[in-house]
Length: 100
Image 1 (cartoon, rainbow, N blue to C red):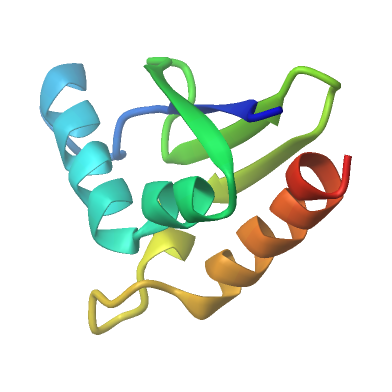
Image 2 (cartoon, helix red, strand yellow; image 1 turned 120 degrees about the vertical axis):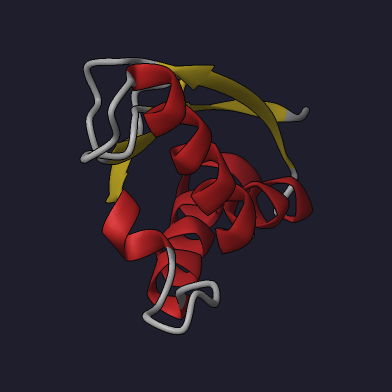
C-alpha cells in the first residue's frame, strides 16, 4: 500500500510578500530533488503551504512521523541537492514508508 507523505512548506524568509516567499521556497524544493526522492522511495506526495512555517519544510505521515528540514539545508552552496537531506529522506522512507 502506498503511503502519503504530506510535505508542508512555508515562505522563504526575507521576501517582500508571503506569495513571493512561497514561490521562492517551492523553487528551492524543486531544485533540491526532495519530491523526486520521496516518489522514487514509494511515497505519494501531498504538497501544502503554511505561511507560519517561515524557512521550513516538514514531512509528515499519518502514523505520526515528522521530520523538519530548513530551506537552508535543501541546497548546498553551489545550489545542488544536499546529500544530507537525501540521507534524512531515505531514513524517513525506510522507517515509515517502505518498512511498514
